[in-house]
Length: 194
Image 1 (tube, rainbow, N blue to C red):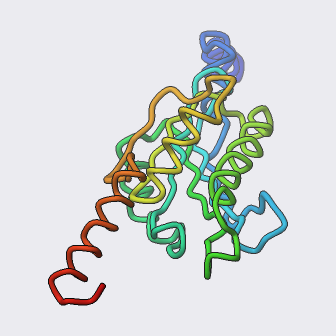
Image 2 (spheres, rainbow, N blue to C red):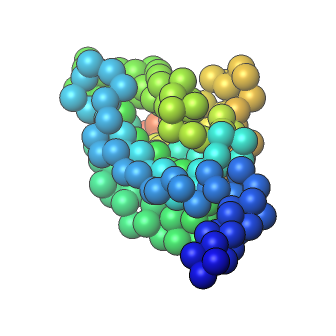
């Protein structure tokens, strides 16, 4: 009789928990570093999955570094990801690299745009094995913000993007080009070089 009471108490405890609570408590957080999503060495991402994640509710924040499309690395956004993980402990995060343009001949645009699209499609194709929903937030800084906007408004036909965060990203490249050109002409005129 003395052994039946503790066993009965455990049975009652488990019976009072629903299946979702048991599943939620059984999943541990997971981190996957330098996951390849293409054949180029730069096409890598870090994936951070929270404990207790569920396909029905766990959203993902996609983080994209800046660097004028020609420099930068996902490691520059590590502190941002770490900070957001503390504030949003129920969210998954991916921090991705993309091919960098060089010499106006290597990895020219739209290589970077295509990499963001490919990385997100790759990640979402594994939503059931990662146990995350397909709802995402895309956040980028500078050139990464430009890529975040492009993905969110141009390359998301299934409407997985629920929010986009633009941290000082360029939005009117034609105006910026023309302004830079006008500044160059003004400088040439001021110095007498035409």
